[in-house]
Length: 321
Ligand code: PMV
Image (cartoon, rainbow, N blue to C red; front, side, top):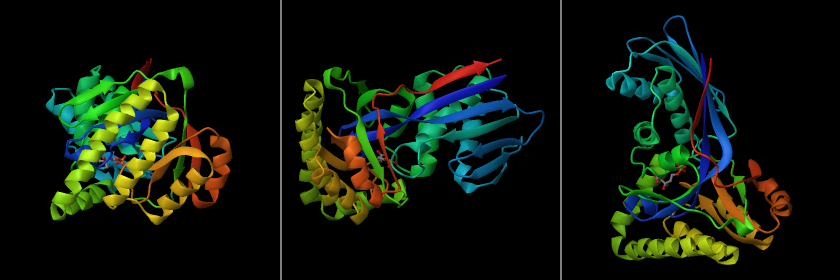
């Protein structure tokens, strides 16, 4: 028996960081995925190999792990499934996919959801999305300390969502009369979401009176963005993305590398552009009428530039006998 599982990456269209303090945000799943292939193994230790992270972890039957620290959070998945009463069996899991790690495209949540769903299926537990979200977010807590839950939600459920911490999500049925794809450009800098979130929370503590207004503006902005998506008004959507970028700049999560590409996209004809995810490096997104032309303008500054389809399906699990 072989289990194949995959989950999408994501971009946050509006509201990253503000979402950590309970404001709404909009995210969409993209057509770049993480895939996990899980096979039975005759004996312990179990093995997890990640191609994107170039890492390997061995886990013995007492759940002691040796190998790469970047994979250590996967042990939590075994602990959680064992606590739920499932008898663990040795396995070999290979993680692959197209998502660049630590770039704000949800690679950690995507690999966690794929791994947990594959392992559950292998142990005879066809996990429901609701439980998969809870377990994925437990793994995200190990990596990011204080996640809002938006990444775990969007990679598990897919589509495009309006999300609010502790309240959950509403699926958005996009008006697809004028479909748009996103231009995504990634900087050469990797960064830690946990550290950036902490930086913002400390800044808010120091400048609460000023930043309360920025958080209020971010909330109104998301409501306006919802309307622009419903109306399929890409000009308005682009303008709101530019305003959102201004707010993210104000809370100190942009960078020179990001600003260069964000500005280049705008002068090259995009309707709007902003960083996506935690910032401080990672990737920017743009909505453009001419994304292919703009790609070549951004390439000199970027580690990777590509066009992504939005609204991709969430976690999918398949069993091959
Ligand atoms: O960069 P990412 O994919 O880890 O995005 C995190 C989004 C934040 O709003 C910055 C944090 C969170 O948990 O919502």
